[in-house]
Structure formats: C-alpha cells, structure tokens
Image (cartoon, rainbow, N blue to C red):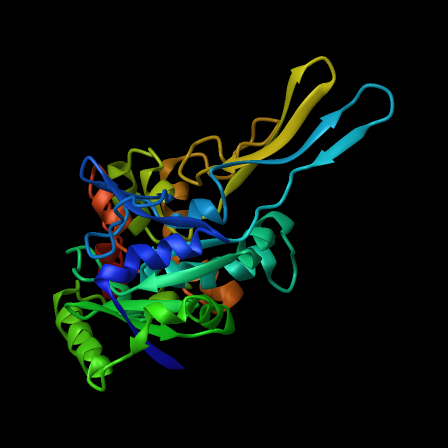
Amino acid sequence: MENRFLSEAKLDQFLAGLGQKYQVIAPVEEEGIVLFKPWQNEQKITLRGSNSVVPPKDFFFPQTETMFKFNAAGDWEIEQAPGIGPRVIVGMRPCDIMSLKLLDPVFIGEKFNDVYYRDKRDNTVIIGVSCEEVNHNCFCAAYGNSPVNGEGADLHLTWLGDGYLVEVLTERGRELVDSQSSLFTAAGTDAQSKKAEKAEKLLAKQRPVDVAGVKEKLDEMFEHPYWEEIAPKCLGCGACTYVCPTCHCFDIVDHVSHGYEGERFRCWDSCMFADFTCMAGGHNPRPTKKERVRNRFLHKLKYHNDRYNLPGCVGCGRCLSKCPVNMDITRIISDVKGVK
C-alpha cells in the first residue's frame, strides 16, 4: 500500500482530470439531502458531510434496468442492452464499500454470473472516503468494519484538516494517481496516526451492538412467538429495503410498447410487500406480516451468513433512520440474544 497527499485546493482539478476519461459519480447535496449523481465540472461535492440518504447501490444494481429489447414479429429479434463505459465513483463510505462484498457472491459468485452487474462492477473504479461524522444509528463496527476502513476500494481518502490522505490500494487506484501525479505529494509521516485517532473518536460515537451468537440463536427461532409480537408494528411500506445497500430482491417484467416490440427489464422489489411471494394460483407462502418481517430479519442476520459466510447487514443504519415506525434492527438483535 502506498500513501499520498492531495490538498483540498487540488481536489476539483483531480476530479476534472478523471472526467477526461471516466464518467465521474459523486455525492452531491441538494436541499439538505446527499445523493450520488453524475458529477459536472466544478460542481461542489460532499465528502465530509453526512452519508447519502440512499446508497450508491443503484449504480451497480439499478432500480430499473433494461435487459434487452425485442421484436416478436416474424423471427424474433433480440437487441441486448449496451454496457456502460468506464466510470469512477467518488466518496463511497466504508459501509457502502463493504456492501459490494456482500452483493458480489449473489450476482457474480460461483453459481451465477449476472452480466449486467458484472459489467458495472468491472467498469467502475471506487474512491472511498472515511467518515467525518457518525450518525447516531451507525453500527458498522458490529460487523468488523470501521468508519475509516478503505478495504474494497481502489483509492481511499481520509480528511486530515488541510487535505486528504490518499491510500493507493489497487493497481486501478495507482493508475488514477499516476495519471495526475503532479497533483499529489508524499503523505506526512503522521498521516496514518491521524487516521487512527479519527477512527478511535468515531468508533466511540457508534451505537454499541453485539451480533455474536445471533445467527446461532436464530437457527432455533423460526417458529418462535417473538415474530408475532413485533410484526404488527410494521407497515409493510418497504422503505427499509429501498434504502438498504445489501437488499437485492427484484422482479422481471416484459413490457410491450406497441405491436410486437417491447423490452424486458428488471426492477427492485421488496420482500416486505404482500405480493412479493404470491404465486399465479393465488397461494402465498408468506401471507401475513409475521412471515415477511421474520424473513427480512432472518435474511439479514442468518440466511446470507448461511449461504455466503458473510453478514447480510453492514450497519449503515439507514433502515433505522427511514423506518416510519422505528422497526429497529439493533433492538431486534438485542431481543434475539435475550430470548431463552
């Protein structure tokens, strides 16, 4: 790993240089809300504020995505959706970077190769950034992460007060730095110690959550009355799944625009919706909120771990922040640990 330093004054110049070769996507604040959007030259980006309201998952697994277009008149004609060009996502937080580690085995693991997801992963360079503040709902440390961890990124930035420590973590990251080497200087000898101090302060502010033993406890709780107790509170609105960086349920739809021409697209779906598991004959294996609430938390805390040996949650806290009735996953973790 190599450390460099980039002054704040040269950040925009660095982004503009990237824009010569890549589409640049970055967090932008609009009306008090931070969202990841394609960056325009000289547009102000938000690297040191709060995390984005929704994760940048949409740039790897879009909310709506055309898979191919078709013409069914005569011999079938299929037009595959074009791939993306090279791009850089700037400002991904450690929790969102970690979420890709959880999504990768789902879409491009040993069993499946989703060409749409792979195209976006392969053509995207990630520049992570350490958190400057911790939302009161954050608990990434519970899953072995840290607000300053750059693992999974190509470059990682940490604010030092007058500029950024730039950690070069991959060859793709090195190419970005080398392409504009005159903008960077050697990092100070105390840069890593400053980063460690930042981590210590931020971790002290996180919500304390202990997930040890939760999966094993849930192995025995499928029929436990606890799910009946908590389910009535849920509205089934799906907000938690919409803002979650690791949720990946989707539907596939064929839409005919006119005549025999149309397109097949996939779009996000939610296991919290009543019709998500409804079958053509009308049978629904998850007919009530109890089954749907149980499935969501078992997926986050047990099923993903069972299948991929990885957690299904990264502790970003977005579901806590956006749930209108405060269905608190950290409280559920605590409750499960206390079940006798």
